[in-house]
Image 1: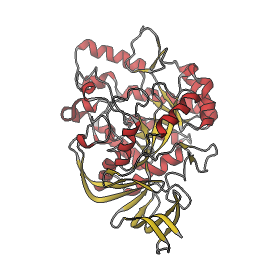
Image 2 (image 1 turned 90 degrees about the vertical axis):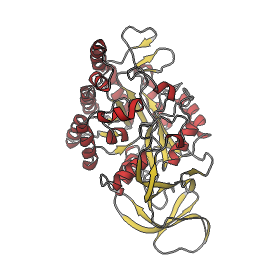
Image 3 (image 1 turned 45 degrees about the vertical axis):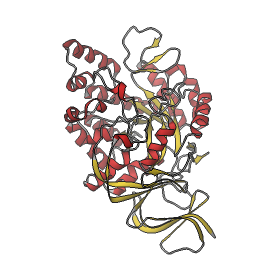
Image 4 (image 1 turned 120 degrees about the horizontal axis):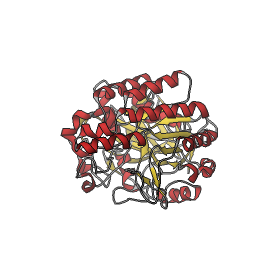
Length: 473
């Protein structure tokens, strides 16, 4: 017997148990898990003594801007950054150029990403109302990981690119879709049984309130929040839940930023509806009070809100209302982020710092390591139809794992980030708890913070039948 890779002496952590055992890998799969040594030759051996082995961590919300604005970021860099941060799989968002709005563009994207991927990857499809309603079924059959709708965003008539700061009357622009169009999208995605994920902000409300704030001449962070208040998320989440109840769609609320949205989601879940939610580190670790110190790097959409929202989000995780934490990795250049708060773009790097920040939260007793395994691994894998292939440590599944040293300190330094862009709200942050190895299908991609392999990532496709494993190709 020859083992391709054996991980010895580590504490295995899943959401359900913690125990010490060795993991034996053959042909990219977990071949055995044993507390007693097994005989055979070993091609590669990793000693995880004093460390914990988690099911491969994943980030379900990444904007690598590839193809498109690759001067900001590209998939080679974002997937390296993921691996450096302990992430074994990422889900790539669909608002690329061209967007993932039909099967032809999906297939082109698979070929594009395959040659650059340092970790495995799923691909989201975009919903563009009647522009691609007829394509949603074939995109589902082709293997997209889910469907995303940027609620409230206008679309460029020629390129289908999203218009982030749309104003009424702009030429060559399709205005934000009306509720009837949105309902049609809910119905069509519901037929597939896949996740329908929404960016939940009311454009109509934001335009109205922002105009009032702009007329006042104020340009500070509090003014930004007055133009994009909690209410903008609340009313869209309410409408989304109502549409999900009407259509049976599996609604997923992206990057939840308000406590009120958590309450609404919790109520819908209690009523038995398949509604899920995610949040991001910037909403868990930052509040409006941090803008003076952090500056423009902190600008994201939806914007970072208040301490009361932060506290409710943490509670939402502990209650299981929020089942996923992800980065919303959306890099921009230093030059783009250096300017007036109201004119600079929203977004920052996040895929590389996601896991360290949550591991430090374990050190601070805000989370348990088993909860990290849930929100970064098992929960997303189950939700997106790729469990137990991903998100588990079971014999026969992909040998994806993240080895972490909960005693190892870290310092986040922008110059050390692997992304093209170095814009982060966490420059200089310190913590304890570090990913020390990223293993993708048995192959070590990151060791002690260094990328040690070339691109080996594969495309992850969910299976149509819930409860069965997905597959990679």
